[in-house]
Length: 187
Ligand code: SF4
Ligand code: SF4
Image 1 (cartoon, rainbow, N blue to C red):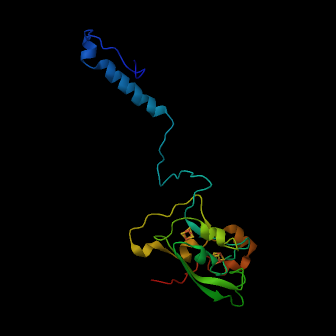
Image 2: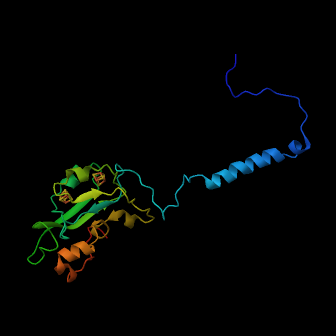
């Protein structure tokens, strides 16, 4: 009984001179190599090119601004409570007069930190947030880090960057620092 259809009958045929010099085998090997030059590449030159990982991928967190460029987070703490890894810490502060263009609610997170060594990218913080403030991006990885200090992501790395759209809707933002120096819980 034949176990596979790939079996070959052994023949005692004498090899030609070319076969003895492996020329057909070398030509076959070269043909396969050349064919791969023109085949669709299966690798991407990361980090210059980032592969799309699909809508369910959860990467770098972002603290969103609203359509006027104000921070959405109201420091309610629900994301920290929902976080199974206890990775989120924050310090709430009260919005002062004149800061209405910076913070959407009367209370905001003066400090908001995520410990990326603890985070398991489950997305529960995103689901718990009642203000649509925290999201895990589909298109950005958390970069590698080599120092323990780098694993604590503060507002400087989390808050969505102020873009032209916000500045246009909110002319006062021109007078305020678009990338303020945020406080940290730990140094
Ligand atoms: S993704 Fe999960 S583990 Fe990471 S901060 Fe959010 S809730 Fe915590
Ligand atoms: S990100 Fe959302 S859930 Fe977390 S403190 Fe801010 S408003 Fe509350």
